[in-house]
Image 1 (cartoon, rainbow, N blue to C red):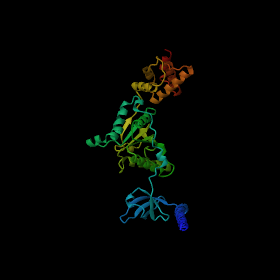
Image 2 (tube, rainbow, N blue to C red):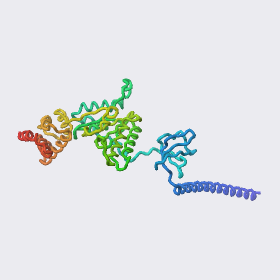
Image 3 (spheres, rainbow, N blue to C red):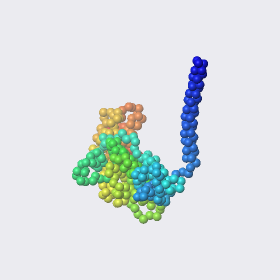
Length: 389
């Protein structure tokens, strides 16, 4: 009896081991089947015809949609059962199947690489304290840019609409771009910077498309500030011209005008532009409702030049004989960029003498060199007189 019972026990163990082995093999077969289906689907993707990109224009009541293909034609197409019709809205990018008859996928928002590069990620280390002699301009910028973004409730209570655009104009080197950098450095809003020359594209319609993409990005990342430097490159007065390049510039300007004062509100988007030639700008861009506030950035006066000298010499090792007021008087008619160049040249003058402290004579020599290199002679006698003291 013991022999029979032991035999039965071994048979049971053997059957159980076989059952366990069968379960393992079934699990392995299921795993391999999934792997096979995965690779089959990948092969199908590689062998299938590319999908067609399109933009939704309208969703019809019967569940179909009107789309514009990336190649140009407009189609009325069906919507796949895997797509939620509620997510289809005008302007949404979708993918059509090979025959272009069904929407099979909603594409994510893809920003133009060229436009995305315009967003300033690392803010400039410049504040309004680094801007000398432009107190009135700084006050206006704070009122027009910072206050509406930080306290929109004040304007709603008063029942007024804050200005949309600000145009900084004045001679070169007087601080227009520096003011924009200070706004970017002090504001918590998204700052998008572009040069107007970047909007002059080679192909027809590209400039207008870039303008649309820039403002679309600005609205999506609001509150935001769009800064357009040297806007006269695309906003010159429009005349009857025959060249295709100038017609393309006019198309770009027209798109900019539409974005500034079109049907789509700018809301929390502020536009700052800078130019040295306000006299050549098209009147359409200067009218109220587009660039509402024109801020003149003139050459600095005596007090302004003293403040600029103070800013640029704050980190310099100066001797006790350096008189910033005298330097401000000796640089009448010069702008902030000129003063910065003079301070740099004074440092080089001290290096050439082999000293580690910048003296008054270094500044006077730098002024003399700078004026002579620029062909300016009306101030040189005074500089020579001061040098001889």
